[in-house]
Length: 118
Image 1 (cartoon, one colour):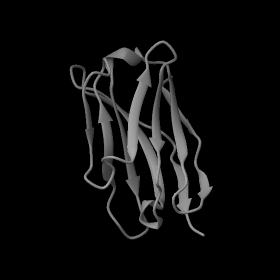
Image 2 (tube, one colour; image 1 turned 45 degrees about the vertical axis):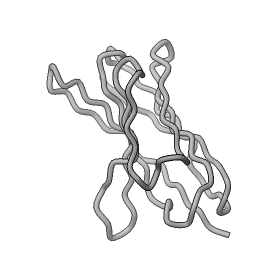
Image 3 (tube, helix red, strand yellow; image 1 turned 30 degrees about the horizontal axis):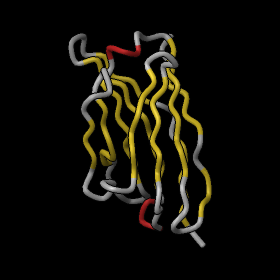
Image 4 (tube, one colour; image 1 turned 120 degrees about the horizontal axis):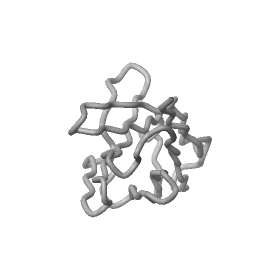
């Protein structure tokens, strides 16, 4: 059974930092491209960051560049999103996503709320 279990969200003041984690089980983690998405109320889900299977390639949304860092530890089957200099507009539900493009497998985490407010 495939599971992506997220942790690390919460309430933080503007300018603060949070680190999200997403631990995978039931999959060969190193085969999956991992991404973080977010969805704010009334808005569409948007890609925040993506990391390749080996961790050598990373892509970021313009809004995340320079503030967020995606990383992965294939030995721990975990992907992270370090978020610094958080802004109120970063408030959203954040989801991790695992995609195996060869076998067309696609899985989502349960979501974790990030709220940036003073």
